[in-house]
Length: 401
Image (cartoon, rainbow, N blue to C red; front, side):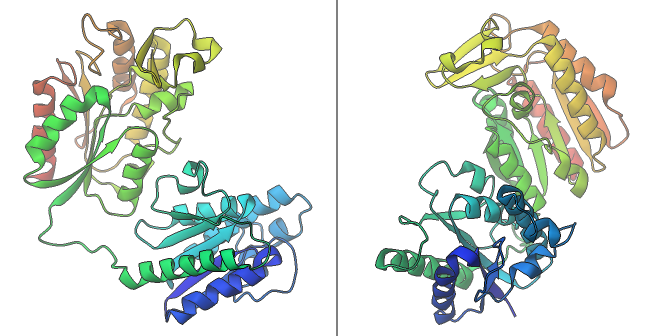
């Protein structure tokens, strides 16, 4: 029997959690309160904090016997992830919390597969929610007032929240492969690789479902989340620019785990070095002092680009090659020898053949090529038709279509 898990800290929000559970139950759903409080107090939880804490790798003592509240919250978050992951009766999850509770509950929701109903009612939902939502489909609702006992405003908010998660669960249909549907492809794009990706999608759209992700940090993460959730069949990862920001501290970084999901699931992977010539920062005055004398290009009032150097490209190239070496599916990685972006060509501000050569050489020297893992060099800029045509040709060859 499926359950909606109602999650919060019963030591401070027991009354609110009980009310929220009743709203969901009135809508005809089984609802269970999961206590993630870090102190021992009587509660109305269906699943106690003792039970949840026991899922921590070091046991309950790593959660409930700590004097450091921040450490206890962090460890309870780890335990909650493992607890939820161990249950196959989840129809939806709803959490309530202030800043601490939100930080505790959000990682568990991020871990859940895409499309599983998830709603987080939070006192911080009117601010920057990116750290809590990440690359997932978490819905956040601002509580307006703090959680300190029920009042008419909070009752209305929690009623809306309970009805919302109930509606999500009522209408939920688990994504199922449709034999009549097109194969889904994830593609990464940035402004400076748009011409390339547009050409690829134009050539493939008739036969494939093309899902394009803007390579702004969360874009790459979202694509990988879909791959992890088995909602993609292959990827054409043309624009790996988020690696630059990860290495040099830009505003659109990938995670250290970039590319790892493709090693884990073995899906066909086509990649390239799109926009690895640039690190993204905000307005020019926000550039870190150590980069002030670098080759900078003001893209617009809010975005300043910094050209990557020879040494930086060597490091990135070796790192990417090691990631590719861990992939066991079919891999084709393209090097556009004539430039990696629209502003990396003769006469353009980021044209730097030496820096590109360092990148290309590092990849080639570190990549272990096999029958299924290939490095393909194209003597053109990434946005030239010859490049996109070769990518399409290789992709169709890999998928035998």
